[in-house]
Length: 446
Image 1: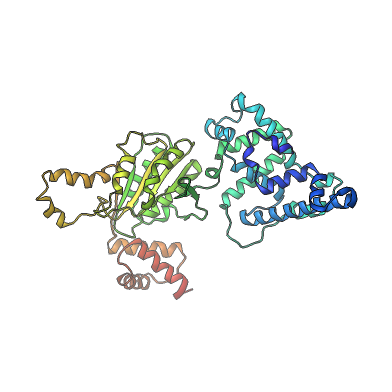
Image 2: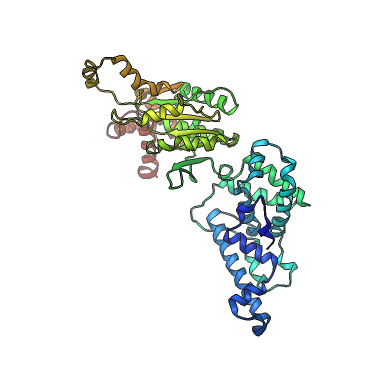
């Protein structure tokens, strides 16, 4: 097959559906029919037609299955191939992502044009222009409407971008136009999963840590958080500097539980993802993998925030020393396109107790021991305190949320019930106020 000679886009080979699409575009294969049905000379053209129809049926069924998983609509033959193209991370797509130049270096262009000529032939395949068996099956791929209620593997915004790119590729008048259109996509949104998803989670694997895309991210925005204006402003200013390529600091958001620390960081992602911000969630057990992950992120043309929620260490846990070296202190410089944002209920991150003072009496260098425990928190250049609201602030949060959710209850009754609620549901906090509003919406009044 022609696709066997792909050079830059060899990553497509081995994908079962792509290989089937390539064989269908090429036409009936007599040798395949012989293997599947016996000697075609004995069975005649019917044997060839049956094998080719079987190939088409399997391919059409597979594309429909993938369209359901991904949320694709319309011409899903072209849509699925477009999806495969944007997933590719190769020498050219990564150059387009980094160089912001849709032409790219001359050394790549000839090989890319050659590959694109082969791929475009598959993309433009029209069974109506062929005298071929099984072409009636393609009608299911032309105007496909995705009505399944299953969970999608792509965020809605990525589905929209793939659909728009597919439409632009359809309008390409030449292989050069086709190539430039795809290059513009890589330049604007990036290549591979980083161009499709905005959040990831570090997961261990035998061959090394991987980044698992987070499909269903929390849609919270910073403006959804009632109050804490100074804290949000400080976080915005640091992130804005980071996104703009200026000097920025690692951030530690600390304070009482339920005050919006985690929501603020999630809101930052939703506010800046369109400008190239990506977030990678890191659990404490995966700290040993942080160095290799950061080395991978360094090579990409995005801004990354490593997000560690509820970060704290007991005094017997020593993983924090590894984190200290990664943030600042190791031989390898932390990538300029990576920051660390963490939340914690502890200001100094490492558990401290009164017994530490008693043990310190026998420590020859007591101050050194204290500094060792404080040094991790000091690696965060910006520390932002989120305190619990007082009664007045709590009531204001409740009233603001009630208005946002169109709850029509007399203010005096609303506040009275909210105050009773907080006594048995975690005390004064934004989280308690939100839980109360959810209770009102879902159970008591609606």
